[in-house]
Image 1: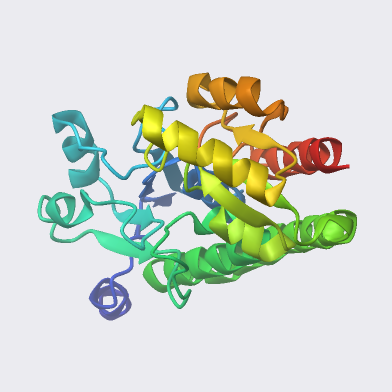
Image 2 (image 1 turned 180 degrees about the vertical axis):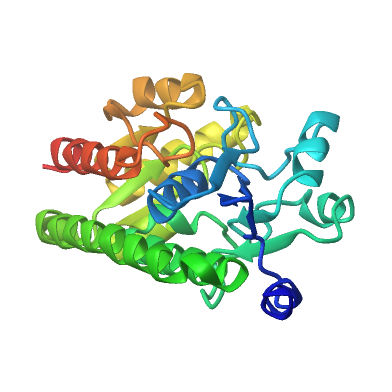
Length: 282
């Protein structure tokens, strides 16, 4: 028995048996979309304690700085699940606080598009992230590898069904020009054949200048864009100003960076986005 335990510890296994009880595996995710994926992949796995690092009001993590409390939580985690592609700029420093921390990058093998990290908004690529997540957890917790993969396959099947529905219903709008609030949707537009004519605020909170507003209005008129899409996480003041000048309606498109802590939250957000797009582009 001692020999078996030593072997398991040697390969980085976090699960051990002590007096008939399973030692918890503490899994920490970087932010909301990755957390929802992890909720599905870890569903029903014994001993897993899953938490999300960043607060619900946090959108994308480009300029996020880990707080002292964040660093403490990272120090106590066994596995950290990240989006990758530069989204978690604080990660390298955070890992230094916990030398035994295993890091799972969900975008492993995904080729970045336009140096953008918003991969999860693409439903097909979200499936790859889920499988990468399951592979990573299976590596560091091999006792439950089969269950992680079973859960991932079940969730991917739901995502595939959603992807098929969105492809079919958005097919009539291929090539349609849209205006987005910030650079959260290039992977989404690429997947569903939409054309992002311009972006109002390339970084949330950086209000466009008067010159930029004028240029944006010109682009909208040149491309005959049908709609402007803001995001529920940020103010739509600039978008409303442009809409008043161009008489183009404003709609809300959700990049799924905040929402309910529910296993089906991402599916529900994307279904709502589908309804919004059909209404806006018809």
